[in-house]
Image 1 (spheres, rainbow, N blue to C red):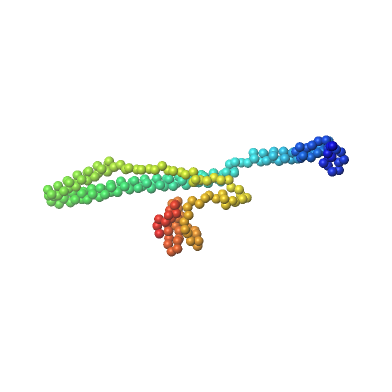
Image 2: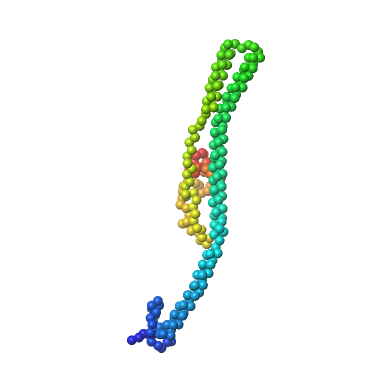
Length: 224
């Protein structure tokens, strides 16, 4: 026996089963049911088309402009740090050789003054000449060493850890504490003195009890 149409006010027997709804319809109400379902597809089609247009209209450069600026500033700061370190080492190298040259320059001036005094006073002895000759020869050997000076420079490769920069999508409408990076290092620190006094790229200056402490990147106290 045929089942009645699912529409309560309909007196006709069902002729079709809608497999999607698992409901029985007469022919007339099945047509209405199909039209109703199809009519719901058109707005969805319009919405998906609108979303597609919105996606195409997004300016990628504007979306990541600030992030690019941060990366660029990080690059500039790193270059400055490398340049500063390079200049410091160049100055250190220069000081090493200049210190030796300055010392020999002072010896030359001292010998020159001694010779001028002996020539002016006309009282040079064989002992004076022998001592001056030995001194000049010693000085000549030292200057020969300076001319042949070379430095052994050991340079380690600059290692960049990928974890230096962490890129993660941020939802402006939601902040999840789980997204925070894991703890790298910890240090016992009084709650009342939670903020450091000063810091640079290598150290923190903190206050612990009655002491000022200089802390390195591994949170080791290197000076107190």
